[in-house]
Image (cartoon, rainbow, N blue to C red; front, side, top):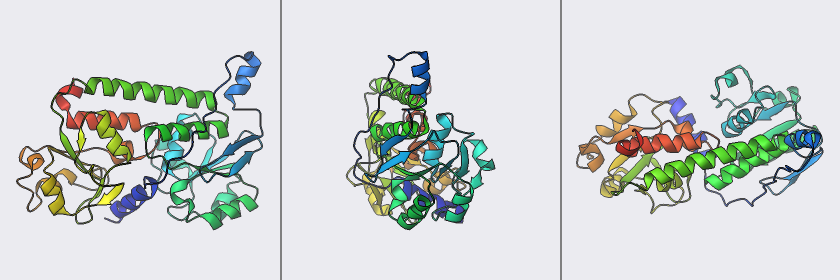
Length: 323
């Protein structure tokens, strides 16, 4: 249960509601010579200046060779950009890809500043979700001469693309970042197009933490956007952000499908929902339409979100997406 509670806390920290960040996209110049193209693939000629999520200008003097990531979403982006070897430290919550198990751990909700400094990074990838609690620690890192880039706390796909492009620019992987964003957009559009054939839209309740502390995604969350993409109705669409909800309210909403996102971290998630007292008349319970989707695929603001949308679509509309 402690593991589950840690998951819930990390989830709420990393996908909490914040105002959207501005667009800071930097296009790759494809008109250069071969030598220039290689330089473009390494980002702009260093030093590089980036306005981060705290609206602070971060100067990165040289292409980073040693990177510490403070949150799993940043780590997944970095690995997808091809920076696995450059990553020297990750958070206690990192679990993907498998290689992260061999990286030095720098803490969970509280980062170990001394450990980070000892790893001698030339870039720390921080995150806006925890920035307000880490001001002093960030300053210690800056005082040690380490650039700290605070990546935006994305709440929709466009902001995820901004995160990928920001990390790509900082690490000299702009071309790779552009390719990742392009592929994600193509995958999302393909799912959206397939979903247009659905004539009977289903109401879906998503449960990101179990009873008695049930949390569900309302408006302005990834999962709300995901449900829209697959042509489903968010049963909690009248709520704002990541909302706590009582069981009576869920019964009253009477969803067609219930999705849990914590089955990877706790046993019998689906069975727990199916056997709840007072839920027997809910349509999803009567029809046994309760499924679990891996939390990391639908909650982490990184490249695997497109895969998460597909998994959600297969759970809600198996007759359309399992063909």
